[in-house]
Image 1 (cartoon, rainbow, N blue to C red):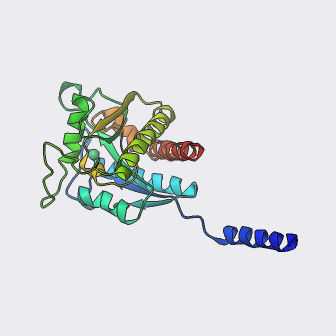
Image 2: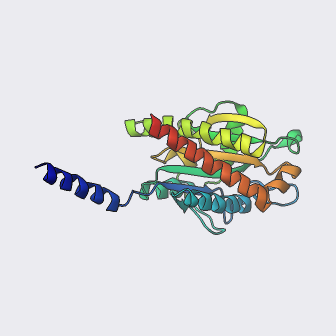
Image 3: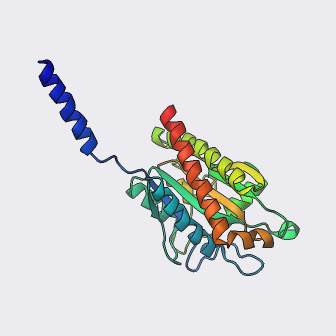
Length: 250
Ligand SMILES: [Zn+2]
């Protein structure tokens, strides 16, 4: 009897070892693309090019951590905002991470620098968060449905799964933001909330990262170097890992 039990334990241990661990899937979304340049820096550096370069490095870092990264685009092409989260839903991704570069209009254009991290809410944290969401949301391609201006994230809070995803989004935002600020030695411009269309459809924890200002000449130059891009990617991957271990410990 005891021997049979031992054998059974051994067999189930083997079965567990043989069953592949389901991969941790992160959809990494390089902002803009194709006809949509995103913000353009003083020397002509384009947000869409830098976000793709950074996203590829993030994907490599996540893969090195044993996860699986899926890019919403791996070339300079237009992808509708709604299709980006839809891809993450279709892949049943664990996380959705949208990568962007910030830009400041007006007299502060050349001065603003640093990192802002966003998760979704119907109301923006402040006027500058409203402006960032408006700029990123302006990317809707011709033919993409016009969201209801009174409630741009309508439907997202309706079921419990989405509410859970939203509170995890805030935890993920703080974990990644902390690593970005410390890893880059960048100015901490805060974790904020705003109604981003690209995040609205995601049914998993989702964040939008403004990893630096392309409108600031010095920061734009840094963001274009492979070494700094790799620092950004490492910080994002470390933030994801920190969120995962905190989740496992809860
Ligand atoms: Zn952007």
